[in-house]
Length: 255
Image 1 (tube, rainbow, N blue to C red):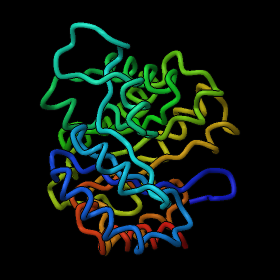
Image 2: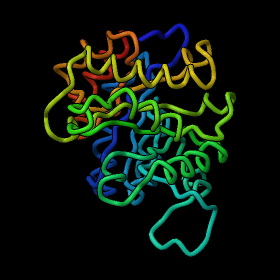
Image 3: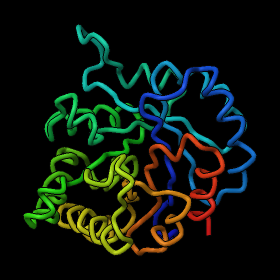
């Protein structure tokens, strides 16, 4: 990490877990454990949990995010949520293009871009996910794919709007599998992302963009991962549901 030019961000992605009551209890458990963090702490929760999360996080350094956003302001899109709905619910961040959204719900590079634009145009900070499958990695396409996905996601995003963009490199082969990229692999992937940003916006601007690692970061490997040059924190899945473990990752990013 290089905190002199960009923010370190640890964001939990709860996925489809926790009821509103469980949300309140978990955040109350987390608050004292992360109170002294020297990084941004974000919890991205299911839509139904947002009111409880916002209320529980009041007065703390924990900020609340959502797990998806639609690209239209309103309309006949059953089951979707607009950026303005999220903002009025107290949300500041939103995950866009997670590998599970791409794999199970038909997200494409085009819809990821549209959702990213909707988020930042409304004033949300978008945590935009990119990553390769094991097959793509084994074929040697990691750099090509990460750069393509990054540039596609940032289409029509201005240099000024990049301050509301976080890119999360999440190798699909390391999501929910317990398999983690080595620190060098994580740094390399994040480096490709930063190179892609530099190719569009210039190196100086690229150095200011937070690039997280999002593949099974946990309490045991967080210190090594966040020590890498291009790893500016993490997008944390299952470990973010365990207060002590999540707090250990926050502590690692606070050093």
